[in-house]
Length: 114
Image 1 (cartoon, rainbow, N blue to C red):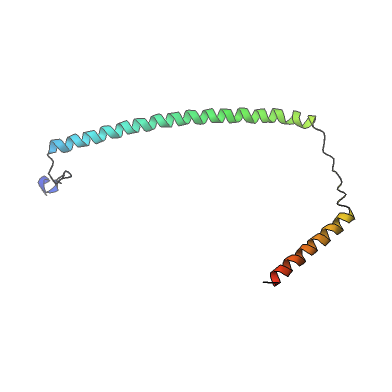
Image 2 (cartoon, one colour):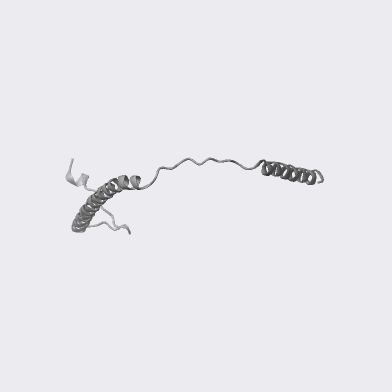
């Protein structure tokens, strides 16, 4: 096989064949752009790692603060005593039963009148 047979012609957007110098120049530009992008990504990774370590330290400090504050707050508060619920007096229960029954009866009456 000849090297000439393996040559792929590179076309511009409007269909013009690019020369070898132009192809080489474009490849160099692509390479430079990729290097710049790689450096930007490395910088971003560095910043994110620094932020991550800062957040880890802050989380540890807050956890320690919670641990030290929790025992003292438990000692200061008195234990809760259960309160008895006597419920509603029987008069109120009877009133609610009659009221709800009469409201239901009125609603059923108007529903059946349709």
